[in-house]
Length: 167
Image (tube, rainbow, N blue to C red):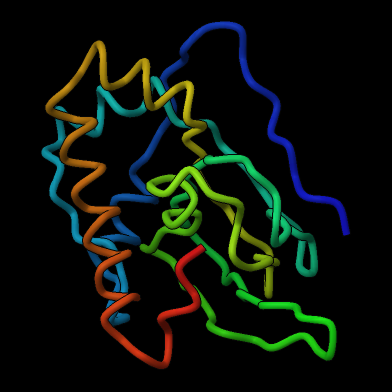
């Protein structure tokens, strides 16, 4: 079960985020992301996000890895698992319109769980280096995205049952 490493284009390129924006607007899960960005801000953000597709069963990232990439889920479902020496425990199912990787993104610590596609998925990744570039060039967009991701993290940490699902 190797984690996915998306190819990084040599230059920032614009992508179509309409499906992601729609997924966020329609999401009803308690820990879904809120759409705090304007259409113009999504346009600016599109230059920094990288598209990623997963097949059912494919691992997005493994518990213990140290990458800080943030992932926004447009379609499909992700299963979050914690593995100890005795067993593998499913912590949560994450649906479209939410985010994963927020724990490591903010904490700079290793991933706390393994995230695997439960169904074919379309995601958008924001590696830490690209977030730093976004922060320098478009600080209002970076702040809005960080606040929306932080709100998801706070919701997960505030829910005892899903607390450990903050990845």
